[in-house]
Figure (tube, helix red, strand yellow):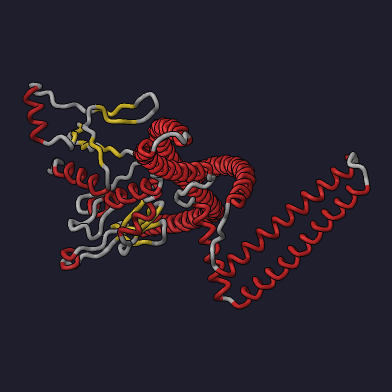
Length: 587
């Protein structure tokens, strides 16, 4: 019986072992199939995500290039507009200064002329008074001379009386000679004043006063000298200029001959026909005016070519000045037309700028929609991966453990599985991601950094490390003391501020933080120091500051009663983190 029972037990044990082996094989096969199935799905989703990511990046780059181009065009148009305004203001100021100089010069000339006329009138009055006195003296002398001549005709007067008369005449001639001398002086002074008045009147009637040369004259002389230098330096240009002068001279001679023939024909027709032929006279006048204008144009061209050849500015008389004024008037009208055309072009440019702004607005809207889609797809992928994901990091053996001869009992099978050696045999565990002992801090942060974008987009994100004492939680989250291998927290701070810096032109960001500790089933505010907590505890007779987790109307979770501090950089935020860590309770 004992042998049968023993054999029976062995058979039962063997059946159990076979059952365990079969069950393990079936379980492994099922797990392998499920794993391969979901792995294929995950690979497909990754490919789709990569395709969408590529498309989004291409569109983003394209739109950013278009935005930069539009910005450059806008800046160029604004620069041209500012330069045009500045040039217009400078020209207006220059013409205003020249106008002021002209008016001041004319007023000075008029004042001088008025003062000269006043002094001349005074001298004329004085001269008239002197002439009146001289005339009175002449009348008296002529009367005395007539009396003496009447007495001289009397033959019966004695010689003594004749001598007396001669002496009286000689005495009366003395004031007459003085009056004549005074009259000559007055005539000379009058002639001199007349010449001065004539010069002043001629200067007043002159259409071009001696004022500083206007900018157009300076420009004309500069153009002539520049053209002369070019003709002197380039032989081909000089030969071309000579040919133009010769052609212009031939054309001028031909035009003058035509004008002379037309005048001769008209004179002959006037001798033969009646002068009441209105149609013929109108036709003649139109032809005559046309030929005269042609001759004037050719003469002006001839003068201009001669000035360019000789390098001298033209000297203009009164007629030329009047003609120049007429030409300037025509140019002013043409300038007005040019200003109108420039205004029309400005309106067209404004319309184009408006269109560019609308296109820019559309680009920004498209960029915003693309960004929203990117967030949507990204969040879809994150949801497919799972809202809660568990990563496993294998800690390497320390020096003390290696010195004591400790063995590594955790082994990574693949990217998602680990095996642990137990007294009952190896056990397998599944995770969303497995990091081996050789994985760096950068590798670990690479798979968790995507959560930072989710946090900036407005989602609640939580990352925490779980494990027994000495398993490497602090090293993974914070890093070493020297920060040669920073952990997830300092890297997350830097990445968060980098994202905000890249989007600072589109959004405004504000970073604030609070830090809590769950100690003895109670939330502690780590930004409030222990001394401060003790002071609050003393004041409230045993009732310390109470921190509670609440949810507002929008569904956002917040800590009521916790102290919040703002940070403007990653370094400042990490300093606040270190300050809070110093207030932790260490058992």
